[in-house]
Amino acid sequence: MTDIAALQSEILADIQGAGDEPALEAVRLAALGKKGSVSALLATLGTLSPEDRKTAGPLFNGLKDAVAQAIGARKAQLADAALDARLAAETVDVSLPSAPLNSGTVHPISQVLEEITAIFADLGFAVAEGPDVEFDDYNFTKLNIPPDHPARQMQDTFYVAPQPGDQGAAHVLRTHTSPVQVRAMLAAGKPPIRVISPGRTYRVDSDATHSPMFHQVEALVVDEGIHLGHLKWTVEEFCKAFFEIDRIELRARPSFFPFTEPSLEWDMRCDRSVRGQIKFGTGNDWLELGGSGMVHRKVLENCGFDSTRYTGFAFGFGLDRMAMLKYGIPDIRSFFESDLRWLKHYGFAALDIPTLDGGLSR
Ligand code: DAH
Image (cartoon, rainbow, N blue to C red; front, side):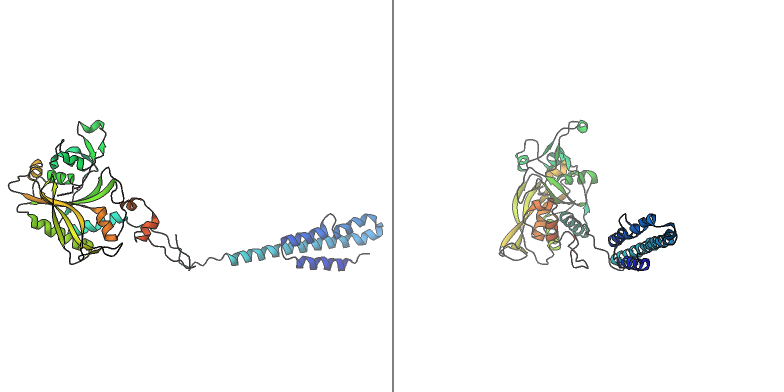
């Protein structure tokens, strides 16, 4: 007859030795499964004499119960251990700093626009605004560019299809910020006027230094006794502040704009002898800043100003070009491509910040 006690201690040892659930299940099957050792023993009960069955029955069933109970206990033990292991592995250290997030920053054009606005605010200029979709009348006619004037072809214009509320007035995407001069004068009604107007402008043009949408900053000063000296001083002060240098040298070239007389274009002395670099203030090269002049008598009159009493100066500089110069950016189109790698390269987007595990935040 089978040694029940030996069998039981053998199975119980196997149960204790099972290191995980599958191993325990294998032990269970080997004992209590259909072909298991304990099941086989129980199956013999039917073959015993009633006498033997009386003693063997409780013995065998006791063995079965003991094995089942031990398996249950071991199962609970294994589950506890698994949970402990998981908790240990998944510990959250709440004292660690959180992973840094990539924060957005101001676009270079907006940044330059803010810088320029701040510089002119220091000089006592207010900001005047006008719409991107402008009256043909303000963009051209009131600026002394009549309908058939050849100067209209200087600027390849995007014309806006007539809209229901136009009442016959033609509209264009403004080709320059100069129409804001007209708006500022009409709104003020009388001098003094001291405004700048930075904003978007549009021309049918696209290459490395021209974008069909670009930015200009316009300045307008109208008062009694305004002369070229005021214009020169303002351009100089602005350039010193914008390019962050104390000593600059400006050159004025005669030019033509229908809305100014005389008209000048300003260049700034610079050094481009080192490839890919521009130094301001010294050198043998000149860098174009933009157009300017004394506001044309007809423009003042078109806006209802007495041109025998008042004079004014104005200038319009390319904002994107100034940003390109200040930050050494060769292609104007990159401003409008929203390429994060480019923005990071020029320091305009948040840089990758090292994380604690030595990686980089994205
Ligand atoms: N509007 C001119 C342009 O887009 C630039 C300009 C020239 C603006 C002379 C002015 C000015 O205010 O006085 O090319």
